[in-house]
Amino acid sequence: MRDDCYYLEDGFWALVENGKVRIGITDYLQRTLGDAAFVELPKKGLETERGGEIGALETAKASIPIISPVSGAIEEVNGALDERPELVNSDPYGEGWFAVIAPRNLGEDLKKLMSAEDYFELMLKKLETDHKRVGTE
Image 1 (tube, rainbow, N blue to C red):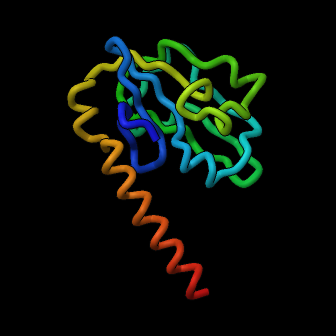
Image 2: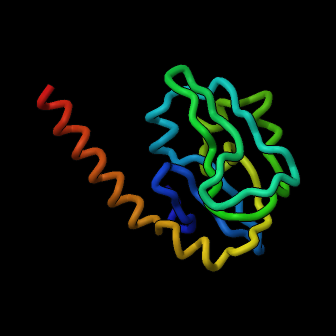
């Protein structure tokens, strides 16, 4: 987990860089889902809302939508994932990013996202709940 990112409860991160927002999947979620087999990236120019689906990630275990943490237009996509989807697993906060968004309402959107500390606490609670559930089965 990176302290300089903002987080969605759904397991996606947002990193503000020079007024743009780079987005990706958290290490926790990629580990939960398993090895990435295919990434459907959004199209450049796509307009999205915070919480909107902009693509999909397929793994051996599941297919999940890629959720946008902010509203805006897709400015750049990580074409390296077309040939090497495993980057999502090996470097989720680095080379495994999905897209860069030119945000519309950055200040408002960031207020609705979680800090690294808050996301960490949420994941701890989730792990505790999952552990208790497994212990009772």
